[in-house]
Image (spheres, rainbow, N blue to C red):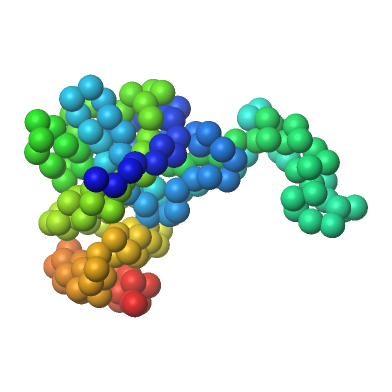
Length: 197
C-alpha cells in the first residue's frame, strides 16, 4: 500500500471547503491535488484550489529584504526569524467522502474538524476516487476565487499522473465534461485545451 504524506492541519472549515496550514513554509500541495482528512467515521476528500503564503499577523505585510543579498536563500539565512513570521496555507474544495466503506461523490453531512490532519492522497486512492468521474459535477458548478476552468484542468492533470494510460483517463474525463458542459462549448474547449497531453 502507498504511504500517505501529511501536508497540513485544518484551521478553518465549512461543509463545502476547508483551509489547512502547512507545517513547513512553501510546502502546500500543488493546485488540483486530491487530499483527505478524517472526522471520526467519515473520511473527507477535497481538491486543492488555492495556496497562499502570508504573515502570521493579520494586516502585516512582508517587506523586501534582498537588496544586498546574492540569492533568495541568503535572505532566509540572514533573517532566520522569517520562518517564524510567515505561514503557508491552502484551501480545499470538498468533493466527496467515504462513510461505512462506501465512497460518495457529494458533500459530507458535516464539515471537517479543526486541527484535523490533511494528507495527500496516494496514487491508489486517487485512482479509486476518480472512477467514476462524478466529482466533476461539483467542480463544474462551484464558485471560487480561482477560475473553475483552471481548477478542473489542474485536477485532471494531477489525477492523470497516477494512471498508466493517462491519455485514456483524460479522454474519459473529456467525455464526462462534454456532457456536463453541453451548453457551454467555450468553457469545455478551454478545459480540454489545458489538459491535452
